[in-house]
Image (cartoon, rainbow, N blue to C red):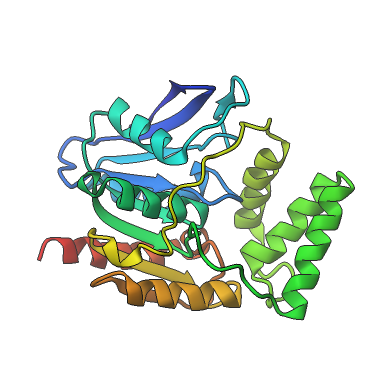
Length: 275
């Protein structure tokens, strides 16, 4: 049974959900969400993972059910350690998407002794070179900035769904139904949330990828932003021994779009850890 608690950290209450079914003897798995989502993006992975692993998901500051008590500087990596410590987990496999992937990579570099495995999906990357966008992607991003400047959060939410859920070069509304409604709910909540404060910049991961020791799987969708696809391929090449996988027909959130294919890839990764 899932259990939810509010974990008090400096300046915030983090909504932490966890489950350790009797007989789930694998290494704990911590699920780290994207910046346009919250812990609900992993709903297609939870029950499957929980049969064999203790599972943890939490909303970062400014997302989901987490609450800001005061706007204050903070560290996403320190918050991750606080979540793990609160559950008594010295080590865990980190599974992160987008900004969640950035947190996972920063954590693996900061404390390799606490990260037994690393799965990153179109990860953000501290210190990475600034991207160059094609005209169509830039036009969509400019429209998002214009909606934000006008305070039109509903329009911004819809445009971000086009960028991150559909994929910037895909037809608008490519992903519809319950998945789209969930995206708009998660991202809409984040857009309306109180400012939690400034997150600290971790040391450049871009300059340290070769130092990552955890067994790593890098995944991305073939409909994601072109520069992210190129960067993911390079990240997989630079991390020693990393596996890589392109999930066909998905954009930035393949775990949400294609949970069966995503879980199958995760299953193969976990099997590789046992060899």
